[in-house]
Length: 89
Image (cartoon, rainbow, N blue to C red; front, side):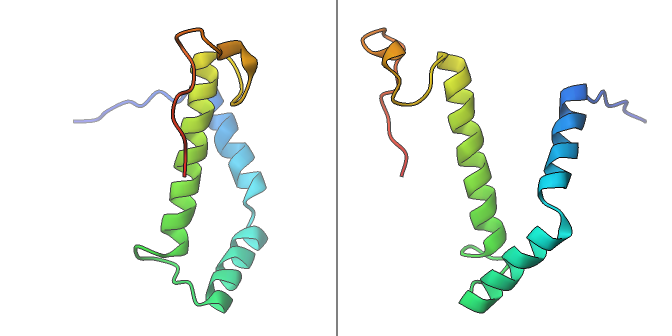
């Protein structure tokens, strides 16, 4: 059974930009820095886990901004019933 996957043009563009931003020299530098600091690449406290966490947190924050229609700390949402009422660590 085959499954056709439709790829949104925005996803293709986002992937292209990510590949440009994270060229091999950036990845090599992150890996070397982690190694120099004694941070493992994998595992619970590893570089990969920390990077994944950071990307997910930033993505969720951006999604909240789009959903609410204003930036964090912006006065637009004050007393609107649809304001940011949490915090991030």
